[in-house]
Length: 163
Length: 454
Ligand SMILES: [Zn+2]
Image (cartoon, rainbow over all chains, first blue to last red; front, top):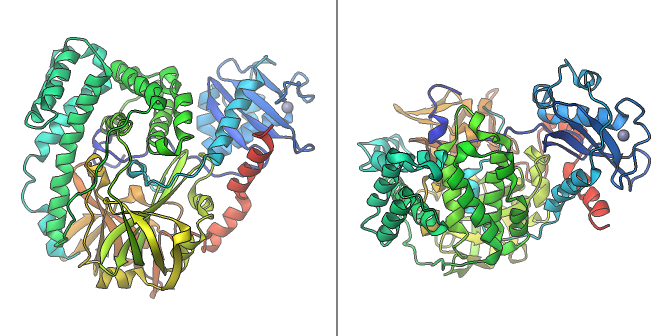
């Protein structure tokens, strides 16, 4: 923080959540670090109706990948599948390497290292919870329009590039 | 805006301002620590806050609430009374700042003649309990569980257009608390901001929509557009002059979104408003017929009641008409320094990109309000000589939020406006990186269409 700017504590309008970096959403439409996991949804390359739910637990590094109907991913044979690789790749694009590495508590110079350095194994993490969080995320885009001006948005200036 | 006006804005102390902000800071500190563990000193801060509004209708309620909280009895009505006292003080600060700005600018402002009746919606009860729980615990005690515990209730409010305003506010606060959890581990807390959002939410939930609207017709001459955004909401707010009577008005359009839709892609959310975005992108005036104007100066935008008019240069409007335009009243609930966003025009200055210098007077640019969804950059501000902007006040000082600038780039005059990309970026570099990233709005809408209705 610049010294001649007023202290955080006294500002009404400031950015608390770090802005996320734009990325291509087609392959991995949803990534989040929540509930103690890096988790998300990966679109199937072959079937447009199917998605994979992939997650990695922070700290213990247990991981799982299955379809949204809870069918285990065929690519999980004793090592993280390609969906888990995509999940970590996109998380690094979205949040930055440092933030993802710190959250998972794993070290590495790039996204691929993070997956390689995971020291957990296959763990049963229910897909339903993550998938329903994804649906809730999507539901924002379907909210009915409201015409009333939102004066409270003056507290939320558009997230600029300057810091 | 002239150097003399800028000097008048800062001339002499603003009586009572530091005292009011000191009382607010005392309350904010108590809220950060939690009302469950007030202690003597913080209990006194609440009593002092209540004392400051003793002469208002809220006085007895606030005094009673401060006493009850000090005695360890915490009920929602007490929290609301103190939130009201804090809001009253900041309302007075707002009024003093705006009065001084109006005087400096020679701007006339309409008196408030609307109303906002109280309301009590059962759908908000879970969120009211959450706000009470946050106050009892204090920001420092907020963990992931408490930060997320109202998520479902907030979703319920967002789904109701009549509760959208409060829902958007609560969703923004909850996201910040989640991202900051456990808050106790944070070095610095945004105590003023979170107390602002908390108090506003408590009061907004109990306040109905603004009444006292009129229907207006005429020509809107755009000045510039202000862009607001958090993870799950975006709002564009156009400041314009409504002819024939030279009235300053705003018109806003908002949309729900997700955090992966940001920067220039935000405009994609507003493509169902082609008249408005077209006027912004092409610098056209707008002809409106029978549109609703609230006593707050907010025009309720309806595409069907609008059409694009002739080319209209915002800089010409700002140079010729802004000085004599009259300003609308501010609704009582909205009276807060953060809401001060008064259009001004400044020219003939020099800037290093951070501060403008005008005949010995200085004014910093509000660089925290420079959106990625438009062409304005610090480099362009540095090369600028004229600016249409909003006067803002935060953290104890005035700043100028640029909405549009005229600059000299490689000895060529250029003009750039926040709304220039309203129908897509016009900058080749931004266009290219956008093409690479694809269109997040259509990707997610496709996913929603396929997966949500199963
Ligand atoms: Zn997989």
